[in-house]
Image (cartoon, rainbow, N blue to C red; front, side, top):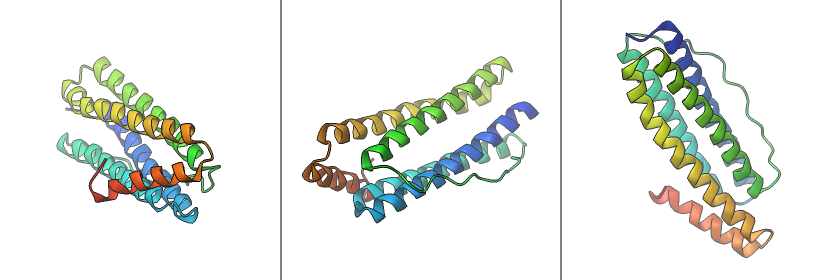
Length: 166
């Protein structure tokens, strides 16, 4: 049986995951307005993935006989400095999410909640992948700088995510 404290903490994480989806949708809108359809596709896929994460947490609470106390979702920023800043912000955000996941793991360990510890391991692994992906794209963008040809190539690469790539 999950504790009320653990259930509340997971409920807070559901809110953070849905905020992440809002953030990525806002980033997709920015990219679309900048004519970077590949960036927009990548961000839209990321938003959908964040909703999936929220639903995993929600389903887990249901399986544990708990209910999430759903809260308002903050509005994300609507403006970004550049395509490079977009991924700099994305990486910084994913690092915050990782820190929250780690706090959930710490709480599950402290409470000797083995089921929640096991469930959270998927998210720990997922966050390693999320940070690595954002970091790799950011490194490419930083390398190309202001070169429009390089930006075009990265945009085309990111569009491939819409065709099934990660």
